[in-house]
Image 1 (spheres, rainbow, N blue to C red):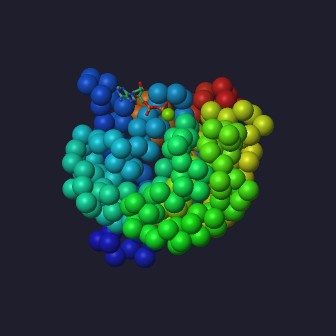
Image 2: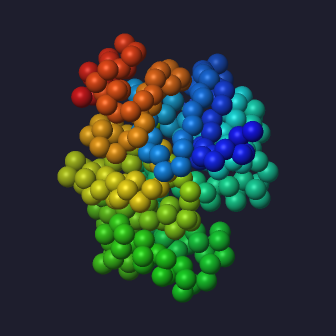
Length: 254
Ligand code: ADP
Ligand code: MG
Protein backbone atom coordinates (compact mmCIF):
# COMPACT_ATOMS: atom_id res chain seq x y z
CA UNK A 1 0.00 0.00 0.00
CA UNK A 2 3.00 2.27 0.29
CA UNK A 3 2.31 3.91 -3.05
CA UNK A 4 -0.90 5.35 -1.59
CA UNK A 5 0.75 7.05 1.38
CA UNK A 6 0.29 10.78 1.46
CA UNK A 7 3.74 11.19 2.87
CA UNK A 8 5.62 8.80 0.68
CA UNK A 9 9.20 8.14 1.69
CA UNK A 10 11.86 9.81 -0.44
CA UNK A 11 14.19 6.97 0.46
CA UNK A 12 12.90 3.63 1.72
CA UNK A 13 15.45 1.01 2.71
CA UNK A 14 14.41 -2.48 3.76
CA UNK A 15 16.50 -5.44 4.82
CA UNK A 16 19.67 -4.21 3.18
CA UNK A 17 22.59 -6.64 3.46
CA UNK A 18 25.89 -6.12 1.71
CA UNK A 19 29.15 -8.02 1.99
CA UNK A 20 32.54 -7.79 0.36
CA UNK A 21 33.53 -11.45 0.24
CA UNK A 22 33.24 -12.71 3.81
CA UNK A 23 33.06 -9.23 5.25
CA UNK A 24 29.49 -8.16 6.04
CA UNK A 25 29.41 -4.38 5.75
CA UNK A 26 25.64 -3.75 5.92
CA UNK A 27 23.84 -6.23 8.13
CA UNK A 28 20.16 -5.53 7.78
CA UNK A 29 19.36 -1.85 7.35
CA UNK A 30 15.76 -0.64 7.54
CA UNK A 31 15.41 3.08 7.24
CA UNK A 32 13.17 5.78 5.80
CA UNK A 33 13.90 9.34 4.80
CA UNK A 34 10.76 11.45 4.48
CA UNK A 35 10.28 14.49 2.23
CA UNK A 36 12.21 17.54 3.46
CA UNK A 37 13.83 15.56 6.24
CA UNK A 38 17.49 16.08 7.05
CA UNK A 39 18.99 12.83 8.30
CA UNK A 40 22.52 12.95 9.67
CA UNK A 41 24.32 9.61 9.78
CA UNK A 42 27.08 9.28 12.34
CA UNK A 43 29.22 6.41 13.52
CA UNK A 44 32.76 5.10 13.66
CA UNK A 45 34.97 4.71 10.63
CA UNK A 46 34.24 1.44 8.85
CA UNK A 47 30.69 1.18 10.19
CA UNK A 48 29.18 1.21 6.69
CA UNK A 49 28.05 4.83 6.33
CA UNK A 50 29.52 5.40 2.87
CA UNK A 51 28.35 2.02 1.65
CA UNK A 52 24.81 2.83 2.77
CA UNK A 53 24.82 6.18 0.92
CA UNK A 54 26.31 4.59 -2.18
CA UNK A 55 23.54 1.99 -2.17
CA UNK A 56 21.04 4.86 -2.28
CA UNK A 57 22.18 5.99 -5.72
CA UNK A 58 23.13 2.64 -7.16
CA UNK A 59 26.89 3.08 -6.93
CA UNK A 60 26.83 -0.09 -4.82
CA UNK A 61 24.54 -3.06 -5.12
CA UNK A 62 23.54 -4.93 -1.97
CA UNK A 63 23.07 -8.70 -2.13
CA UNK A 64 19.76 -8.56 -0.28
CA UNK A 65 17.12 -5.98 0.49
CA UNK A 66 15.60 -3.07 -1.35
CA UNK A 67 16.19 0.63 -1.85
CA UNK A 68 13.27 2.67 -3.17
CA UNK A 69 13.71 6.29 -4.24
CA UNK A 70 10.58 8.42 -4.62
CA UNK A 71 8.48 5.24 -4.73
CA UNK A 72 10.55 3.55 -7.45
CA UNK A 73 12.73 0.54 -6.72
CA UNK A 74 16.37 1.42 -7.42
CA UNK A 75 17.70 -1.97 -6.38
CA UNK A 76 16.25 -5.19 -5.03
CA UNK A 77 18.09 -8.29 -3.86
CA UNK A 78 21.22 -7.74 -5.89
CA UNK A 79 19.66 -6.33 -9.04
CA UNK A 80 19.76 -2.70 -10.09
CA UNK A 81 17.10 -1.16 -12.29
CA UNK A 82 17.85 -1.57 -16.00
CA UNK A 83 20.21 1.09 -17.25
CA UNK A 84 17.83 3.59 -18.86
CA UNK A 85 15.49 3.63 -15.86
CA UNK A 86 18.47 3.64 -13.50
CA UNK A 87 19.86 6.75 -15.12
CA UNK A 88 16.48 8.46 -14.86
CA UNK A 89 16.16 7.62 -11.18
CA UNK A 90 19.76 8.59 -10.42
CA UNK A 91 19.01 12.10 -11.61
CA UNK A 92 16.68 12.37 -8.62
CA UNK A 93 19.55 11.67 -6.24
CA UNK A 94 22.37 14.19 -6.04
CA UNK A 95 25.60 13.15 -4.38
CA UNK A 96 28.46 15.16 -2.93
CA UNK A 97 31.67 13.42 -1.91
CA UNK A 98 34.52 14.25 0.40
CA UNK A 99 36.82 14.64 -2.62
CA UNK A 100 35.10 17.20 -4.79
CA UNK A 101 35.58 15.37 -8.11
CA UNK A 102 35.20 18.46 -10.29
CA UNK A 103 36.13 18.18 -13.95
CA UNK A 104 39.56 19.87 -13.90
CA UNK A 105 39.53 20.91 -17.57
CA UNK A 106 36.13 22.65 -17.33
CA UNK A 107 35.37 26.07 -15.89
CA UNK A 108 33.20 26.42 -12.81
CA UNK A 109 30.20 27.29 -14.99
CA UNK A 110 30.82 24.35 -17.32
CA UNK A 111 31.15 21.98 -14.37
CA UNK A 112 27.61 22.95 -13.42
CA UNK A 113 26.10 22.99 -16.92
CA UNK A 114 27.57 19.73 -18.24
CA UNK A 115 25.09 17.48 -16.41
CA UNK A 116 21.90 19.30 -17.44
CA UNK A 117 23.16 19.64 -21.01
CA UNK A 118 24.38 16.10 -21.54
CA UNK A 119 21.94 14.16 -19.36
CA UNK A 120 18.84 16.33 -19.44
CA UNK A 121 19.28 17.69 -22.95
CA UNK A 122 19.02 21.26 -21.75
CA UNK A 123 20.00 24.02 -24.18
CA UNK A 124 23.08 26.13 -23.55
CA UNK A 125 21.27 29.33 -22.56
CA UNK A 126 18.93 27.62 -20.16
CA UNK A 127 21.74 25.59 -18.60
CA UNK A 128 23.89 28.71 -18.21
CA UNK A 129 21.04 30.59 -16.54
CA UNK A 130 20.39 27.69 -14.18
CA UNK A 131 24.10 27.40 -13.34
CA UNK A 132 24.41 31.12 -12.70
CA UNK A 133 21.45 30.94 -10.30
CA UNK A 134 22.95 27.99 -8.46
CA UNK A 135 26.42 29.51 -8.29
CA UNK A 136 24.85 32.61 -6.83
CA UNK A 137 23.08 30.48 -4.25
CA UNK A 138 26.39 28.91 -3.14
CA UNK A 139 28.10 32.32 -3.08
CA UNK A 140 30.27 31.88 -6.17
CA UNK A 141 28.81 34.33 -8.69
CA UNK A 142 32.26 35.84 -9.10
CA UNK A 143 33.86 32.52 -10.02
CA UNK A 144 31.86 31.32 -13.03
CA UNK A 145 34.83 31.62 -15.39
CA UNK A 146 37.43 30.27 -12.94
CA UNK A 147 39.07 26.89 -13.33
CA UNK A 148 38.77 24.42 -10.43
CA UNK A 149 42.51 24.42 -9.72
CA UNK A 150 42.34 28.11 -8.79
CA UNK A 151 39.69 27.55 -6.10
CA UNK A 152 40.00 26.82 -2.40
CA UNK A 153 38.66 23.51 -1.11
CA UNK A 154 35.58 25.22 0.28
CA UNK A 155 34.89 26.87 -3.06
CA UNK A 156 35.39 23.57 -4.89
CA UNK A 157 32.94 21.83 -2.63
CA UNK A 158 30.39 24.59 -3.15
CA UNK A 159 30.77 24.13 -6.92
CA UNK A 160 30.25 20.40 -6.41
CA UNK A 161 27.03 21.15 -4.54
CA UNK A 162 25.85 23.50 -7.29
CA UNK A 163 26.69 20.85 -9.87
CA UNK A 164 24.63 18.25 -8.02
CA UNK A 165 21.71 20.69 -7.65
CA UNK A 166 21.80 21.44 -11.38
CA UNK A 167 20.31 18.00 -12.01
CA UNK A 168 17.32 19.18 -9.95
CA UNK A 169 17.42 16.20 -7.59
CA UNK A 170 14.72 15.33 -5.09
CA UNK A 171 17.25 14.07 -2.55
CA UNK A 172 20.82 15.08 -1.82
CA UNK A 173 23.35 12.66 -0.33
CA UNK A 174 26.47 14.10 1.29
CA UNK A 175 29.37 11.84 2.27
CA UNK A 176 31.63 13.72 4.69
CA UNK A 177 31.48 16.86 2.55
CA UNK A 178 33.74 18.86 4.86
CA UNK A 179 36.23 16.20 5.95
CA UNK A 180 38.86 17.15 3.38
CA UNK A 181 38.68 20.87 4.15
CA UNK A 182 40.92 23.08 6.22
CA UNK A 183 39.01 23.98 9.39
CA UNK A 184 38.48 27.60 8.38
CA UNK A 185 36.67 26.50 5.20
CA UNK A 186 34.23 24.08 6.82
CA UNK A 187 31.72 26.77 7.79
CA UNK A 188 31.10 28.10 4.29
CA UNK A 189 30.11 24.62 3.08
CA UNK A 190 27.91 23.88 6.10
CA UNK A 191 26.27 27.26 5.54
CA UNK A 192 25.21 26.23 2.04
CA UNK A 193 23.91 22.90 3.35
CA UNK A 194 21.90 24.74 6.01
CA UNK A 195 20.38 26.92 3.32
CA UNK A 196 19.32 23.84 1.35
CA UNK A 197 17.82 22.31 4.47
CA UNK A 198 15.85 25.49 5.14
CA UNK A 199 14.55 25.42 1.57
CA UNK A 200 13.15 21.97 2.23
CA UNK A 201 15.65 19.79 0.41
CA UNK A 202 15.57 16.17 1.53
CA UNK A 203 19.08 15.33 2.68
CA UNK A 204 21.05 12.41 4.00
CA UNK A 205 24.36 13.59 5.39
CA UNK A 206 27.29 11.56 6.71
CA UNK A 207 29.36 13.92 8.81
CA UNK A 208 31.45 14.25 11.94
CA UNK A 209 30.23 17.83 12.37
CA UNK A 210 28.15 17.32 15.49
CA UNK A 211 27.22 21.02 15.65
CA UNK A 212 25.63 20.71 12.22
CA UNK A 213 23.79 17.57 13.34
CA UNK A 214 22.49 19.33 16.43
CA UNK A 215 21.37 22.44 14.53
CA UNK A 216 20.06 21.02 11.30
CA UNK A 217 19.18 17.33 11.61
CA UNK A 218 15.62 16.19 12.03
CA UNK A 219 16.92 12.70 12.66
CA UNK A 220 20.34 11.44 13.70
CA UNK A 221 21.04 7.82 12.79
CA UNK A 222 23.91 6.07 14.54
CA UNK A 223 25.66 3.31 12.59
CA UNK A 224 27.99 0.72 14.03
CA UNK A 225 29.16 -2.54 12.55
CA UNK A 226 26.79 -2.41 9.59
CA UNK A 227 23.59 -1.75 11.50
CA UNK A 228 21.72 1.36 12.59
CA UNK A 229 22.10 1.14 16.36
CA UNK A 230 19.47 3.77 17.01
CA UNK A 231 17.99 6.87 15.46
CA UNK A 232 16.09 9.82 16.83
CA UNK A 233 16.05 13.56 17.23
CA UNK A 234 19.43 15.18 17.90
CA UNK A 235 18.21 16.08 21.41
CA UNK A 236 17.57 12.45 22.24
CA UNK A 237 20.63 10.99 20.53
CA UNK A 238 23.05 13.52 22.01
CA UNK A 239 21.50 13.75 25.49
CA UNK A 240 19.89 10.40 26.18
CA UNK A 241 21.28 7.79 23.82
CA UNK A 242 19.89 4.36 24.49
CA UNK A 243 22.83 2.31 23.29
CA UNK A 244 26.15 2.07 25.16
CA UNK A 245 27.96 2.01 21.79
CA UNK A 246 26.38 5.36 20.92
CA UNK A 247 27.61 6.82 24.20
CA UNK A 248 31.12 5.53 23.55
CA UNK A 249 31.15 7.00 20.06
CA UNK A 250 29.84 10.38 21.22
CA UNK A 251 32.35 10.53 24.07
CA UNK A 252 35.11 9.97 21.55
CA UNK A 253 33.99 12.71 19.13
CA UNK A 254 32.37 15.39 21.30
P1 ADP B 1 32.38 4.23 6.68
O1 ADP B 1 31.95 5.13 5.59
O2 ADP B 1 31.42 4.18 7.82
O3 ADP B 1 33.77 4.52 7.16
P2 ADP B 1 32.43 2.21 4.62
O4 ADP B 1 31.04 2.04 4.15
O5 ADP B 1 33.35 3.01 3.77
O6 ADP B 1 32.41 2.75 6.13
O7 ADP B 1 33.11 0.81 4.80
C1 ADP B 1 32.57 -0.21 5.61
C2 ADP B 1 33.48 -1.40 5.54
O8 ADP B 1 33.47 -1.93 4.23
C3 ADP B 1 34.93 -1.10 5.90
O9 ADP B 1 35.43 -2.15 6.66
C4 ADP B 1 35.59 -1.05 4.55
O10 ADP B 1 36.94 -1.46 4.65
C5 ADP B 1 34.78 -2.04 3.74
N1 ADP B 1 34.75 -1.71 2.31
C6 ADP B 1 34.24 -0.58 1.79
N2 ADP B 1 34.34 -0.59 0.45
C7 ADP B 1 34.94 -1.76 0.13
C8 ADP B 1 35.32 -2.38 -1.11
N3 ADP B 1 35.10 -1.77 -2.29
N4 ADP B 1 35.92 -3.59 -1.05
C9 ADP B 1 36.13 -4.21 0.14
N5 ADP B 1 35.78 -3.69 1.33
C10 ADP B 1 35.20 -2.49 1.33
MG1 MG C 1 32.85 6.76 4.72
